[in-house]
Image (cartoon, rainbow, N blue to C red; front, top):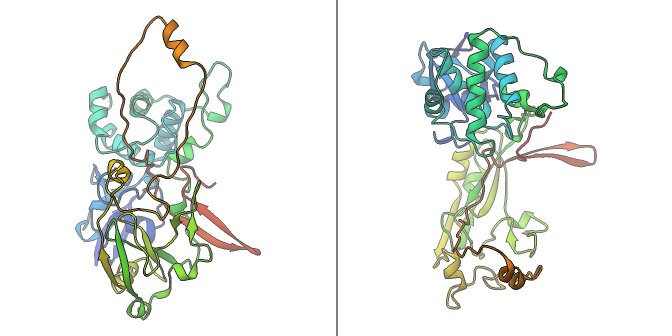
Length: 367
């Protein structure tokens, strides 16, 4: 039995699991966000015995007698001040990282009443923001310090004049306080939990897929493959993207979906996945755009490695260059990595009338 306190309430449990998962799955405290689950992003930051900690790196077995504070554990005064200052300064955009950012700020401001900018920057060094940008967050934290230090009242944002004032997002405070529900925060009574079996290789032919042992697991409800998908090809320009790679098919990247597991419990998903027997024929991968353009490279898709070719002409570039006052010649390169958001890529579906209502990751909340 492990005993510790969460927001001043005594908690006792026999489960030894990540604090992040315990807070969300056992206690329903969804304000602590699950971003990376490996200690990189800081979205799950809580305060443990007065120190900011990433809850995905702490097990319940290590919390004996500890006091844990989550975003839900802030006092009413703190909620008012943090919510207003972050909203006023425009420090909340998608809002996924904001509760964790606020907990790191609180750990600082509980000890340092009048911090410097450098101290604020150091306090949130472990918290990644994808879309807001750090300057507004830093300014908001300094404003929080001032409001708390000078005991300033916080106005109702609905009563703040709009003329000649920066616009305050109506969803900023719910997001900042962790009350806004992202797709991964939605829990339905009796819901099933899904996990995808993904390719271990960037390019490989699937020779065998045996689901028998996995389906015998007591928590396994169903396992779906490409055979269960009526339209197994997706695509924005060309329909060439497999929903799930079939047996005999070839994967195109490490992570291609092969099977979808439905379980009664979230804890059983890794066990069920581990019971699936799969055999690959590992093939030569295509690892860069330069390789893909080589005529001797393997074809990633049946139609080849060039998706589309477009020529865009707009205006008279030659004339503009001849008449402009200044010319700059330079080679510019940009990465081809995705501008990935912090929110988990997930979805929650429920029956609704004759159809299905689906909540998807969208960088916003469902309220």
